[in-house]
Length: 332
Image 1: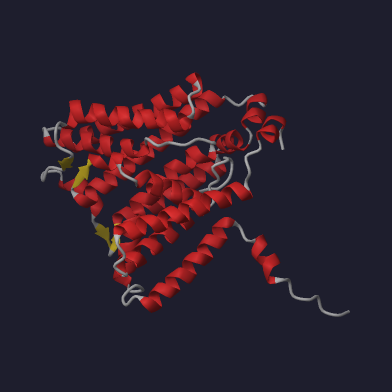
Image 2 (image 1 turned 180 degrees about the vertical axis):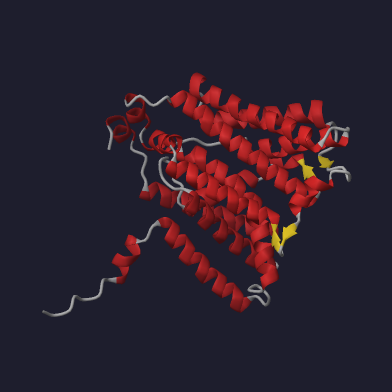
C-alpha cells in the first residue's frame, strides 16, 4: 500500500483554533521583534512586557465571562477606577487597609449588580446599560467621593498594600495574580455547573430558558463577577503605581479589553472562548505594543494599528461565528 500523501497545508491551517492561530502569530511577531529591536528578547524586557499586560489580562478575564454569556460591559473600567479610588480615600482618611478594600469592593459589586438588574429585568441592551452606568458612576464618584482631583494617591502608611506592586524572586506580583486568577476562572468556567450555565446562556439563550436555566439571576452573576474582577485589576494597578487616575474611566482601556478577548477567540456572539483565549490575546497585544514602543512609534500610530487589529478581529469573529437569530430561536 502506498503511503498516504501529506495533508495539505491549507487544510492543516483550517484545523487550527483561533487561540492557536493567535499564539503562532505571537511567536512569529516576537521572533521578528527580537531580530529588529535590540534587547526585545532580554529577560528584563520580557518581565516588563508581562507586567505591562497583567492588569489588562485581569480585566479581560472578567470581560470574557460577560461576553461568553452574550453580553458586554463598558463600565468595567469604572469598577476598576472608582472602587480603587474609594479604597485609597478610605485608607488616606484613617481607615484600615482591609476596610478600604472592603468599601471599594462594595462599590464595585454594586455596579455589577445594577448592570445585571437593568439588563436582566428592564431588558436594556448591554451596550447602553453599561455605558450609562459608566457615566453615572464616574460623575457620582467625582462629586461625592473623590472631589475636584482626578489622581488619588495611596497613603505611605499602607505599605502592606503597596507590596502588591512588587515582585517575588524577580517575577512581578501582578503577573502572579493574573496567572492565579486565570486558573481560578478556568476552573469556574470549565468545571462548575454555573460555568456551564454561562456557556449555555451565551450559546443559545432561548434554548437555555426553555431548559429551565435561571437566566436573570445568571445575568446578574455574570456582570457582578466582571465588576469584581475589574476592581481587583484596579487594586493591582493602584499598588503598582501607588495611585489611581480616575480619568481612565473616560479613556480607551475598555477597547483594549474587548480587543484582547475578541482577538483571542471569545466570540461576541457568545458561548465560545475561554481563559486560553484571553491569554493568547494578551500575549499578542503585549508583544505588539511592546515592540511598537521600542520602535518609538507614536501613540497615534499605535492607536491606528490597534484599531485596525480590533476591526479585523471583529470581522473575523463575525465570519467564523455569524449571529443567526432564527437559529438562536430554534436551536442549533
